[in-house]
Image 1 (cartoon, rainbow, N blue to C red):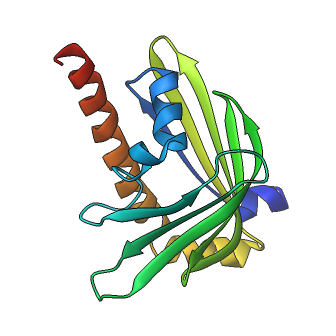
Image 2 (cartoon, rainbow, N blue to C red; image 1 turned 90 degrees about the vertical axis):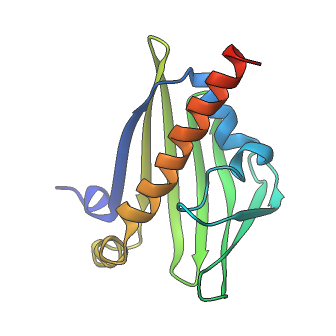
Length: 156
């Protein structure tokens, strides 16, 4: 296994939603607030500048009352294909690269989410801290958001 593979945590999912809707959910603030956080948590979009070189910053209030800050800078955007951002999730995860890949597939969207860590040890530590549960919960919320959006367009 290559060093990059050893440093990368990956989640793959297929959403039963068209590519444009999944893309919009990732790129528009009014949609991000409805799914980005794990179940039961609210998110506040402080800043969202969706362009290469643009920055984003979100906050979540943790159950213990502390604020959890997610922030980063977009380094690559290929419309309807790929988003790459440097990211920090303070205080738990810092200085990672996130790559989000989108692929249309017969009305569905294949989705690959990769987080590249500085070292294999750091990736392992993040996995042990709940990487898959946390992001999995957020992506379950994204799935529900997409289903609701599709149902709302069918039944306005």
